[in-house]
Image (cartoon, rainbow over all chains, first blue to last red; front, side, top):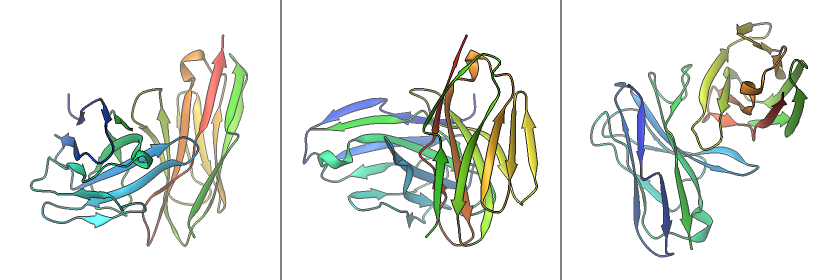
Length: 115
Length: 109
């Protein structure tokens, strides 16, 4: 079934540790995104990528980095996790470029707890 | 600043009791307004895109409408399976997509 897969499903992490959240899409979409979802705040964009080799910052990029080596994969790395990064993380993709008219398709999410 | 506000935060309905969810927005030029459905523990699922004031879209018991300042998601004769959180998002011309905090809908049998 075409779509977005994310791994892990959930993770408990000690503060200061490095963590990479994985995201893979098989729809050959151009743009990919990482969001965090916190209670009462809605989804907030962390980083995005329009094509392999290019990335951009979203609303809340501090403490996170991304890379886009190919069309399908878009990992999100927390270099040194802090408790405020406890959240549910969603990867998404869209056929068109970021900021265009296209709807976004979301993965199932990764629930991350930083202690 | 581009902003999206959804109301109410939570809504409880009896099965068959129609109602509407509101999404108010302020953006520096609207490229599109999106409605998503999110079930507990899952990612948002796309429902509708609206591009201009006066536009309406329908899908089963749901109808989305758009004005220059707000959008409504009308739910007609809801069923328990319509229980979910409904998210509204706006795509401004010169900024990232902005999401509202959502309305959590519960439909009791």
